[in-house]
Amino acid sequence: MKLYLLRHGETAWNKKGLFQGQTDIPLNDSGRELAVLTRQNMPEVKFDRVYCSPLCRAVETAEIFLEGRFPLAEIKKDPRIIEICFGSQEGASIIEAKENPEHPMYNMLWHPELYHPTDNAESFEQVVARANDFLRNEVMPLEGTCENVLVVAHGALNRSIVCAAGYKEIKDFWTVKYLNCCLTTLEIKNGEISLLKEAEIFYDSSKFYSVWSEK
Image 1 (cartoon, rainbow, N blue to C red):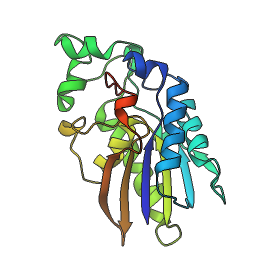
Image 2 (spheres, rainbow, N blue to C red; image 1 turned 45 degrees about the horizontal axis):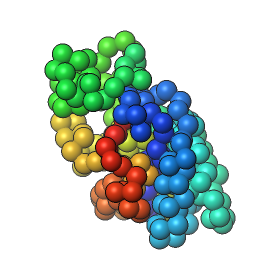
Image 3 (cartoon, rainbow, N blue to C red; image 1 turned 120 degrees about the horizontal axis):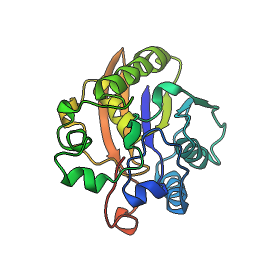
Image 4 (cartoon, one colour; image 1 turned 60 degrees about the vertical axis):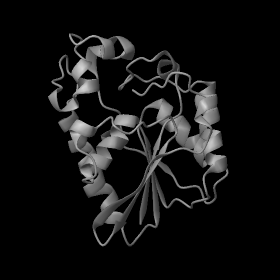
């Protein structure tokens, strides 16, 4: 069984370089275009199950990406795969956080293993724990029943699933860029998980990104 992890398309906050987290920001026009291009350029796959973060940027990405695929699998929203919560820092500038060692999000970006969240934000350990619960208790039992499972979620959440699968440590959380609409593919066989491809894109990123932003 293959598990496909798709990140949502671009939003206005992505474009401005702001921490998004669980703030429910919709796709912008570029984000919708990225979802269309990814659908058009990715090899055709029949998805037996589709799971989605409840945030609207993920839901719309899933709807665009799945348009025209028959039979169309039902999109099941699961709160375990919502993006990491940044608390009061949602809406703050990523660039400012990167450049200021005193910023509360500095370690989150540069030294994630040292990050200690405040103001009801989530730790990396917490988001990996719920990603692990989703992976082990929701997805892995589908082996033998499903051939292809799609998850449409977020940059940090999709990395957390890769962490839960044993292929990434928290200290290396941000080492691979997860551009909007990137696709990570895992295989589950006899209860074992293999990472096949990470953060694959199906469009020309130079046409969409002059400054890359993640969260």
